[in-house]
Image (spheres, rainbow, N blue to C red):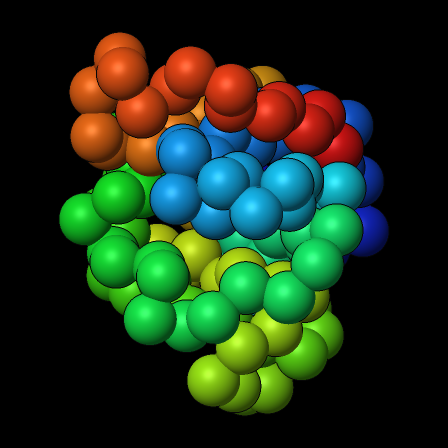
Length: 137
């Protein structure tokens, strides 16, 4: 199992491809960066959420969980926040927190390796991706 430092560096170096569909982008708001959020469990670190910083504030009610998918992961919640801290939930914020089930996903997401990609995309279909902004972090 990799050390905590190597695991976190691995998450950073693998990169995150972030895609948000038309509802948020209708206001000319775009993703600026993404931050991997980990949590320590008995068997090591797990990748449990992503904080996506946008160029403007996003209302919490514009973020239905069903609009987000993460390859090989279960999205459990999506909400606005004022920072990358998942406990900093708010009615609107510059950050969107996408929480993931810590029990599933590829092996690298459970700190047993460092290769892989997390793909975030709106689940509304091809038409929702017109005008979509991408942010590699």
